[in-house]
Length: 443
Image 1 (cartoon, rainbow, N blue to C red):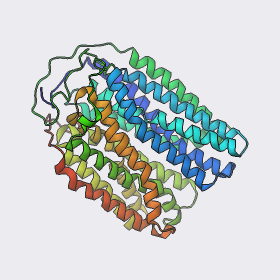
Image 2 (cartoon, rainbow, N blue to C red):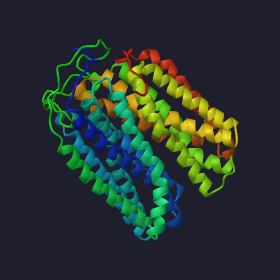
Image 3 (cartoon, rainbow, N blue to C red):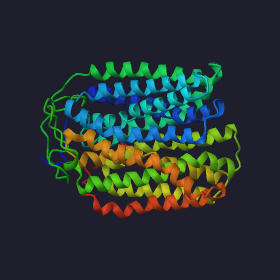
C-alpha cells in the first residue's frame, strides 16, 4: 500500500470533535509559551536577574522543548493515547508556570534563581508535547484530501493564542494587581484546559476505517494506512513496538525536511525575537501601546496564513508550496526594512502571514515521508529538532550579527532572510508528493 493512500478514518462528528479539542490544546500551548520570555523579563526587573540568568532560562526552556520531543514521539507511537498525552503535556507546562510564580514570589537570590531554572526545565518538557502529538492526532484522524486543511485550521488556533495572550496578559495583570498573580491565573487555566482535553478526546468513539485506496504517492508504503485497531480519533496507537526506529526514519527526505525546518526557524524566529527591539530603536515606536499592537498584528497574520497554506498543501506539491512560503517570508521582511509607515505595517502583516504558516506544510510532508504508525516521532524530528531547535538558536545568531549595536539589526535581518531563502535549494532533495485532490481552493 502506497504512502499516499486515502483513508477514511472515522465519522465526521469524531473528526470535528478531534479538531476542536486539539485546536484548544494548540491555543493553550502556544499562548502559555508566551509567558516564558515575559517571566524572564519580570525577573530581570523585579529581582534584578542578570543577563546570564535570563539567557540560561531561555536556553534551558528551548533545549528541553526541542530535545524531549523525541522521547514523547517514541512513547506515543509505541503506546498510543496521543490525545491523553496532549493533556498531560499541558499539565506539565502549567506546572512549569506555577514554578515561575514561586520564583517570582520568593525573595530575590539563589533560591529564586534555582526555582526559575527548574521551572524553565519543566515548562520546556511540557511544551515539547503538543506539536508532535497534536499533529499526529490530526494526521491519523483525517484522510489525505483534508489533512492539510485540518492542520491549517488547528495551526490557526496556535497563532490565535500567540496573538491574544500578550493583550490578555496585560488586561488580567491590571485586574489581578500584579504580573506574578497573572502567571498563576493562566497556569490554572492551563490545568483546567488539560482536564477538558483529556475528557474530550478520551470520550471520542472508535470507528473502523474504510479500506485504503492507493494513489501512488512517494514515501514509505504504510505512511498513511489505517491504524491496526481502527481508532477513529487517532489517539490510540498501533500495537506496542510497531513504531519504526529513529534511524530507519532518517531517509533523505526526512533529513532534508528537518534541515529546512531548522534553518527556516533559526532565521525567521531569530528575526521575530528581535522585532520588538527593532521597532523601538530603528522604527522609533518606543515602549508604547503601538508597539504591542504592531507585534500582535504580526502574529495575527498566521491566523489567516495557516488555513490558506494548509489548503494549498492539499492541492499542490507541498515541496513547492513550502519553498514559496520561505521565499514569501524572506521577501516581506526585506520589504519591511525598506519601507516606513503604512507600507512597513502591511509588510509586517504579510511577514506574519508567511512565517507563522509552516505548521501545516511541514507536518503534511511528514505524513508523506514516514509510516503512519510513526507520525509522532516523525513530527518530533521535523518540528522538535528542526523548528524548535532552530528557534533556540535563532535569537543568539541575530544577536551575534548585530556586533553589539542595534543599528546593525537591518543587516542581520537581511542575512537571515537570505539564509532562509536559500533553503529552497534543498527542495529537490525531498521526494515529490502528488497533489491528492483537485478541489476549489476555498470550497
